[in-house]
Image 1 (cartoon, helix red, strand yellow):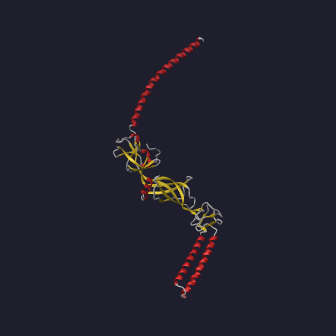
Image 2 (image 1 turned 90 degrees about the horizontal axis):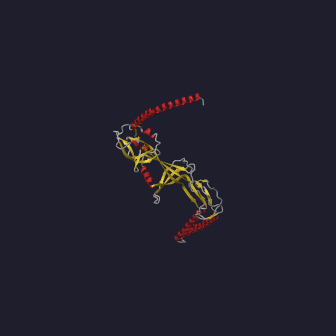
Image 3 (image 1 turned 120 degrees about the vertical axis):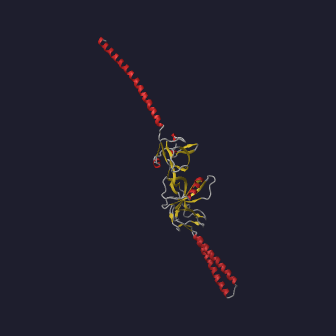
Length: 384
């Protein structure tokens, strides 16, 4: 390296050292100034927290709908077995499975030959008794026989005529007719089958009105009975089918059984549903939803409450701005609100935001009131 290059290198190293010393001196004062400003800002935030605004609101009266769900079984209002009253062979069957039939329509016929022959024999016996009665009456008129003979002949005639009527009834039993409009179920016997008295041939269902049975726990039964005569509560009964869709027709409670099931603690209710389109069939299942509309219920957002030892409380603020812890009893719980049974009135002021920052007996210095409608419109918070 020549002398000129060595001198240039020495000058560059000296300049770099001087610049480094200057930079090392500047950060010390800048860091101290920044630290001083940071302490001041931290102190200011702490002071602001002590003046945090507490938001208040009030309960609101409004109608709420309470829904209770029960598993149910769907039954026809009339579902009977079709059975013969006489023994015999089935003639050709004029109905099909699943067919709708009308009252009085012929369903089955039993071969009537034997019953027709019996009727003919009984009619002949009645004719003989009638002739004997006529002859005896003439003899009585001629004083040939006593009146007792006439009474005996009259009794024989009455008996013979009764036998004729019995044979006619037996013959009519060979034709089985529908006792009401309905739907034919599965045919258990076919043409030519020998059927006996009381043997089930098929079933007939009247599906114009469906009876839906479901079990209600004792506590909910007592609620229903208490609200049945209360005009402030309306009941709506809805049926949800197995596919999750609601049945188009509304229902009504038709009956309540007389006895509780001691093993389950339930009692059976029956809801009646019109079935004009005959969509519902005997034996279906589903869910019954009972919607109870409670008018002028006191409601509050869930987030204004807190629990202590399984009891629920809210903070109520009096006219002097003093906070008081008050126990409430929740009647019904919904997604974001509580319907209150006891503990609050519509005129109370309660802590809406800042529940965790206040204490019982504290006097609020900074509070703002938010109307109940506004508070209830933004409730996507869980209870504390």
